Length: 150
Image 1 (cartoon, rainbow, N blue to C red):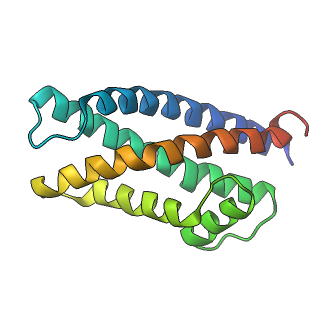
Image 2 (cartoon, one colour; image 1 turned 90 degrees about the vertical axis):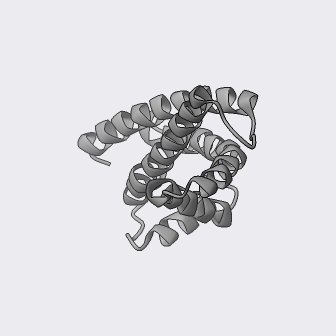
């Protein structure tokens, strides 16, 4: 591994940590609010921040960190699904199916405009966030072999 790749990994892991921390803050806040029939404007704002942070963290993990880990492990590129499957084999994630769902919810967050679908997205994000957060921890541990000399 080159020094440049190691520096890039350390930099991306810092971004990952920061994104995890703000998602965890929103997760706790929105868990306390819970899923309701109607939300107060402040609660909607909290959930919208939460879903945006969920989407951002999933992008950082799948699009940046998993791709970089594959490169460091000398794995071939492939599709997002290939990257997720390799992450499961490396035990960075529990289930590729759950991460495909995380990716689909991320896409829903980016493209959903119907108010009645928003409640479903909020509920899914509350359910999937613990999986995403656990995978961040596993990935950080896995990357120590590259950042701490093995």
